[in-house]
Image 1 (cartoon, rainbow, N blue to C red):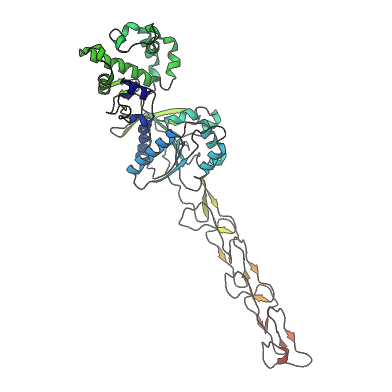
Image 2: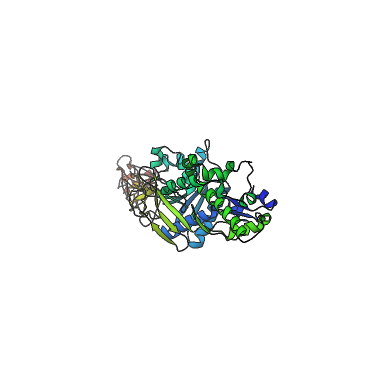
Length: 482
């Protein structure tokens, strides 16, 4: 539709298009929009992460379609500009997550398990995404020690969760375009609509902005303004406020040109488009003004959070111009507190490793050294062992003992006829010829005494010389020495 309008030379004021491609004024030279481009909200989320949460380490899960790729790439670009050393991981989900994509989503979410990050951005509008995230397996993403952030579009998916599923997302921070909630103004708007009639849009406006229906009362904007019976339904429409402001600005721009003496036959195309771009007014969606390419200038963002009952609560407005917050209440986070969640887990104590959101003791046979953030315990090597869980180091096998396997919980005694003369042995050595060892767990072998000999290795006893013969020396290795 935007391309068709441009080819016809018609001025357009769009209230629903958010795609970033519509920002190209070479392709859409006569298009303006009261809807905010996706990239503007991505920039807002990036500012929130960088300036309010200091997110130097974070994961961004994004749909793999055009919306998700556009949002994630713009957010990544802005974050790297604001925080050059940010550790940012982009993990794509399916193009349009839905039934049948659950296992693929699980595979993608599992990529975050060992990253040791606590800040997660969710760029998805789909119920299936949040249904999978609510599963117990992904408690390292959705937990009371992590921070979830998303643009306002996530409410399309979150809103379809059951109350128990939605409550798991307590503390999720949601950033949307500012001042779009009509809220307490509903009674005023209903009264306002009831006073409007077709006479509020006199000629030459009817000729400049003609109706396609012979009856002016059936025009979409006439129904929008005058049909008070549909007021509540319209107020629940996400795009209603954008549409209201678009219609109002279009009429106002045309009326200004009429007041300037422009012939009604010329009020179209680039003349009307330029007047729209020059317009600036406070509408239902806040201040509406435009960039030179027709994009709406976004001056504020609305921050909400999900409370313990799974209900979205407005925290306040962020002024994107002066970079300041006007908070009506302090956001509540997943742990129920007002304390911002750090982007990195604290180090686990020596002997424990980070298992998702928790510290877990190393099992027996493993160890975790001090001074690092590990996501798995290290297996004790051969010649060492750890007898109990939570070991910071593995113990070396003592002399007289050995262990040939990794991950051992104990060392073994050397058998008779063998010895271990050093620590950390992976196998025992056989006693040499002329020696023996009749006990287990020994670090040396005994010499064969006079009158005995041993002509093989690994002996537990020495051989007696035959008859009354004896040997001149100890440690003899042959019967011939007798």
